[in-house]
Image (cartoon, rainbow, N blue to C red; front, side):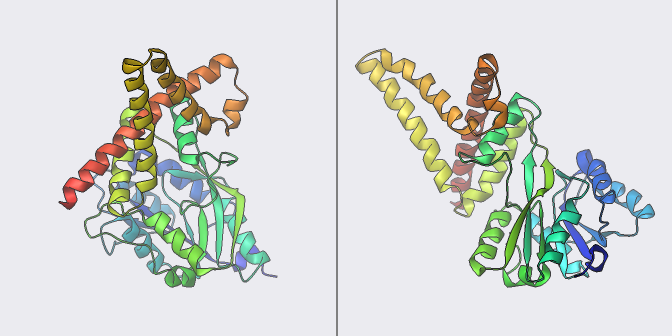
Amino acid sequence: MKNLNEIKASVAIPVYNEQRSLRDFLECLLSQTLKPDEIIFCDGGSSDKTLSILRQYQDNNPTIKIVNRDGVCRGAGRNSAIESSKNDFVALIDVGNLPVNNWLELLVEEIIENSDIEVVYGAVCPQQDNLISKSLSSFILGRRNHNQLLDRSVASMIIKKEAWRKAGKFPQSDDGSYVVEDLRFLEKLEALGLKTTNKQSALTNWGLPESYVEIYKRFFNLNLGSHKNGYSKLLLKGILRNYAICFLMLLASALVNMFFLFLIPIFLFFRVYSYHRFNMWFKESNFYEKSSHLITGIFVFSVIDMASINSFLSARFYQE
């Protein structure tokens, strides 16, 4: 059996205007219990201090490499970084995700234990620092038993380079827009039937937007790419269904009985509750705290709804 030092692992990271979180990210990577053989950053034309920060760290850490991007989108950044790597195994992560100190070691251990493994999925833990980020994480994790973790993400995984090639690499866009390259790539891997495994303890902590304005901007841009590539029909269908139900209740209150008007907030609370109930922070809350979570959730979900609808309309206008 190989020991940890016999598996050389590269880490590939696309970057674009990451100065706010880049230093913390670099410190986390450089303090890993298993040191990466190389850390490859592929910049997408940052206009802030991203490149200067990378070069400062590069002066004292020769494992850090900066490569040019063959293309303009995030998928192109991932592809160029992986293409530039010299090792058979490449770990993937994003700057907005801070790995635990043994993240890479845990991923590599799975490869050592089974030489047939081609992909090891770690896990992503959306950070839940306040009422807003807790509601946002609840929406992202969805209505399922999730242990408050995303168990398949390109922000926490290691892949054999040959498997990346088999999957046709990450999808790219010509104009730099988001094209759901992460989900599309994961779907390709699943369709290939590769030998994969999960290591949930290989965690990265994902910092979420903490204001309504930031949430709106993030989901508008994400959904713009999703709409263009047909990945948001289910979300949009759910949003339109929910607002259709509210409209019918409003109409019934005007035509039948005012009682139906009171059903609207009940429906909105139940919608948020259907997501929140899977989270430990909600289960362990008292009545007052649960009420605060539900009210905040209504605002957060409404902002996401507005961003999704507006981005859909913008995408339709763009196509026309």
